[in-house]
Image (tube, rainbow, N blue to C red):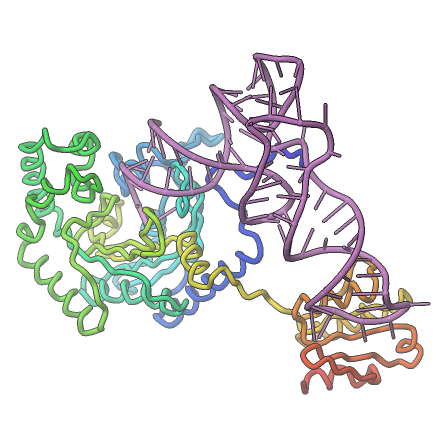
Length: 422
RNA sequence: GCGGGAUUAGCUCAGUCGGUUAGAGCGCCAGGAUGUGGCCCUGGAGGUCAUGGGUUCGAUCCCCAUAUCUCGCCCCA
């Protein structure tokens, strides 16, 4: 095939039957949103660069290396959004979503495209999609619980249980800073034993060293200062309440003192859902609290918590779960036109049936009756209507039930009633 | 950004120790059944063997580069 155009690296066309799975996920997220009383928000796919610099953090890889940047014709520095929390917060501030009148806001987003310039891998793309929620305005541990419950509800509704909830707390800004200093001091004293990657990270993002997969690092990490010992009383009791709420909701989790999130704005509760059905890119969903972000971006002091989940990874896991079998959408009726003279009548029958809510297809290639029947059989349709010269002359139609193979000639006027009662 | 593996029909994959017409299964189309699906039988279409260079009498095969996918690292959903 002579073809020099293709989808850009790290992007993907979502074709049937996979698109059915996407639709199913989107429907599920909508349903869970309704069940929890959340409403959908949609924000622009690009924003001013400064939004992400101020929220995600200038030093993070996401902002410093991975954003798709461009200058628009008005000279504004723009970025395709690498994540959604910043945009939602910006929108919430801009439109006063959290005020004294409306003291909290429950928002969700669905299949929203994000962009990061990374090296593609299975489950990691340059354009990827997330669903998630942002719960603005509540400082209560109930909010932390609800965010986790929401995420779990989506996965459970889709029918799988092969995931694992990891939980940690990062404390508040000042305890986190104190912990971070101690951690850096400790790591510096063990500098020689650290991996090359971690030596570099010591300068850029020391918390992430805790997450290192390099075996050189693991023994050192084992003796590192633990955030738990640096929590103030309020943070510690918040975390305790979150844990006991999870327990009473019968949600099992594991404490991961080394779980730190890559974005700067998190504090207190952070969590991740991982799947054993994925490779090294195994995080299905991640989230946590960001109580200072809204104020930092110029809004009123407003606590918040949320999560974001990757749709591509969910699709991979679902495919595996269902052994690659994706249910296709089936039509109700296939009209076989055996004689060209029947075309107009066939089209008008199709139109009438569609108005009555039936899904109707017919051949568009002028193929033989046999070919049309083959397609009808393959499409999984329930009924075939056969229209040939005999039926035309008698103002009748042949109705065949594909499950039994039984067929009968009926007056065309009786067709709709018969189908509706079948 | 770093290191490995891969790329042959619509799909999943064989294959050629470098030799002239590149194969299978599934799928697709047609016929057997001149107006009837699934099962069966027969036939058919469909490949510049990822792209561009090089070595060679000759390259799908060997070498180099590029692209894309993929595994691990980095990072993260």
